[in-house]
Amino acid sequence: MRQMTGAVRTFVLAAALSFTACWAGAGQRVNVAAHGKRTYVGAAAARTAVLYLRGTPFEMGFAHGALCKTEVAHLVRTVMPAMLLGMGVTPARVDQVWKGYAKHLRPEYLEELRGLAAGSGLPLAEVQRFHAIPDISEWHCTFFAAAKGPAARELVQIRALDYETRAGIQMYPALIVCKPVRGVPFVNVGWLGHCGLVTGMNASGIAMSEIGDDWDMAADNFDGRPLNYVMRDVVQFSRNLSEALSLVKDKPRTTSLLYCISSARENQVRALQTSRTQCRIYTPANLPFRTKPGLVYLSMGMDSNWNPRVGAWLLGRYGKLDALTAMRMMKELKTGSLHAVVLMPASGDVWVANATDTAKGYDQPYARFSLTAALKDPFFRK
Image (cartoon, rainbow, N blue to C red; front, top):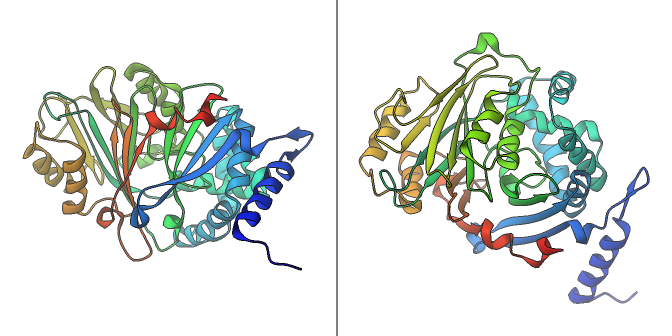
C-alpha cells in the first residue's frame, strides 16, 4: 500500500473525524467541526493549545472530547491516579464526594461532562472523578487585582497557581474559549480535558482567581459546589460585580477557599474569604493587610507570611502596575509554579506561562492571547 503524503493524511483524518465523530450515542449526533476548533497561540517556547467550543453543553463537551482524545485520556488515566495516590484518596472515595457535588451542579455542567466522555470514548465516571480533584486537593497560590487609576495603568489581575507538577498535569495546557447557548462567552485558562475552571475571564470583563486555605476546616463538607464550578458559575453567568459576588455567596459551597474577582465595567476589585458557612467580602478599604485604594491581594492563605511580602512588592509599584510588572512579580517572588496568568478584563487580553517537566511556570515565556479577537473568529459567527 502506498504511503500517504502529509497533506493527504491530514485531509483524510479531518474528513474521518468530521464524519465518524458525529455519532454521539443514545440517538444524539454532533458535528464536531461545527462545535469545536483547535489551534495554537504563542512562539515555540510558549506554545499553548487554544480550543474553541460553541453550542449546547453536550455539543461543546463532545467536540472537546473528540478533538482532544489523547489529552483527556492523559488527565483521566495518568494524572488523576497519580494525584489520588499522592493525596492518599481512593477512587471510591472520590466517587462518593462527586455525588455530593452533582446535587448542586447546574444540569448543563453534567451534560457537558457526559459529552466529554462520549467524545473522548472514556467512562463518564472517570471523567467526573477527575473534575472532583481540584476541590479535594490543596492549591496554594497568589492573586492580586489592581483597579485602573489609583493602583494600575489598566485594570489587571493575576492568578499564580502553585501546585505539584510531578503528576504531569502541565503536559497539555490550554486556553479554552467557550460560547455557550446560555451565559457569557469566556476563556478557561487550564488544560485540555478540564471543563471546570480554576482561572478565567469572560467577555463582560469579569475575571476570577482562587487560593486554597483551611481557615474554617471544621465546617468543610463536600455537599455543595466544588471550587472549579463555583468559578465556572461566576465566569459564565455574571455580567457585573454584583452578579459575580452573588454567585459565590448565595449558593452552596464546600470547603475553605479564597477568591479574587475584578470587574472592568465598574473598575472594581474584591477578595473573598469563603467556607461552607461563611463568605467575607473584602474591598481595598477593609482588606486585613496593608494596602491602598484599588488594590486587593492574598498569597498562600489568610494567615500566611507571604501576604506582607506580596503587599510590599505591590505597594512599592503602586500606580504603575500593569501586565509586565505582574509577570515580573510572579517571577521575582517565585509564585505560579504550575501556571502564571495575567488577566486584563477591560481589553480581554490574557498572558499565560505554563510549567514544563523541568521548569516552573513563572520562569517560562508568556503566550499572549486576546479573548476579544478570538470571539470575532468566523467559527463563533456560525
